[in-house]
Image (cartoon, rainbow, N blue to C red; front, side, top):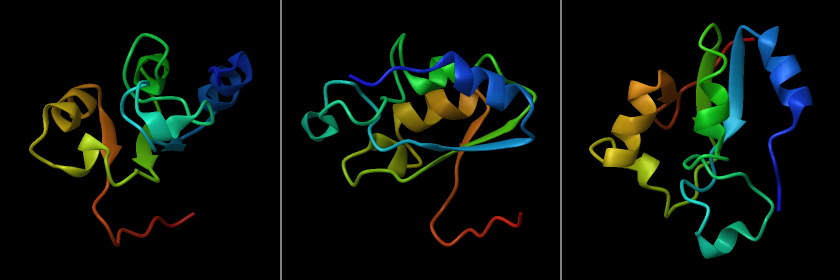
Length: 95
């Protein structure tokens, strides 16, 4: 199973913007197969990202079963309350 690394915290501490994989919202989604950290839960990326409110935080690469794709979902509201973005299709980020 994948875990959040302290190295990620170190890298994000110096970042202005973080674009993070949000493939699966919950850790019990079968397609996850240990390769992706879930967004939700105590070991999820949303919890880890809460330690870095200074950076712009964006989820990308969402699976078609991820409730974050629905702008009206409770999952999307939870992420928005945490100050993390899920951008609509077609958005381009300039680096």
